[in-house]
Length: 217
Image (tube, rainbow, N blue to C red; front, side, top):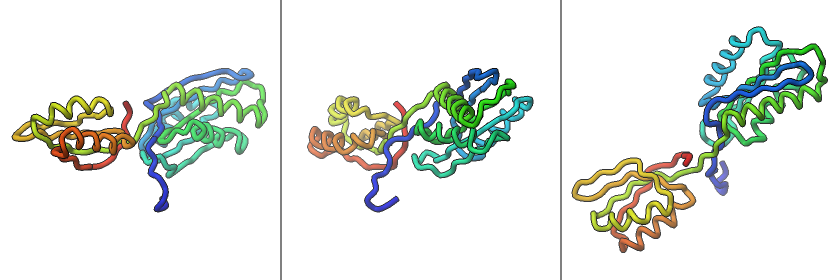
């Protein structure tokens, strides 16, 4: 990443697993999609479906891995015997078109006896991948700033009224001689929230950034 580039604040992936199917000129296409954390996870998913659908004509697959960075780190595909460029690459491009990371798609085809041609295969595998991704539910996470907040009990009551306005997430809280909160807020709201809390407490509260994460709310 260049010095002047902006770190990504969005991360799009799949909520879980999904499956959908359709028929095209007597061929049955079954699209399967899943969220994965690594290439190893992706290959395990692929192999499980290859075993489950061992009697199928083809099990075309593709995956795109980022490990939560919102930057493509690895992408692979296989035509599994279909004409080169007709199936695996269109599957990967369908994943990219949806902007999805850390996802694997396997499309199982049972040949129905009628040739589709390369163009027909591209359309069919693209469609199978798209409906599988949608069945798995595409979700977008946002970058959150994690921070600790330390304050007095009197100021805590003031702060408590402000936190919901910024969508702050409470991860933990500790009450001793002072109140210590472990919180997270969308990165884009952190500066405004910090300024507001400083204003209402006359800068008496102490905030310390502790990290970042992608979260979905």
